[in-house]
Image (cartoon, rainbow, N blue to C red):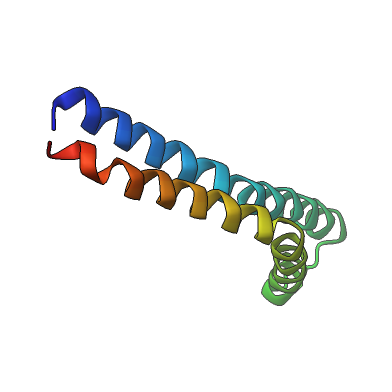
Length: 89
């Protein structure tokens, strides 16, 4: 196993992690900013007011994007397993 192969595997792993986590993180960010703006405009500073909408939004996002995330992770895992014979040969 040479350095280029290790770097390629690491790059592929990081890119897969970014792709899988991006939808949920972006939705949490958007909902958090919207709730923050609403809280700032109304002067209501309640922690559960920001937590519950984020939780609901992330649950809905997981329902929408969950199957795609699972397929992406399974494809990555299959690619890694298919590379095992070539890693040490």
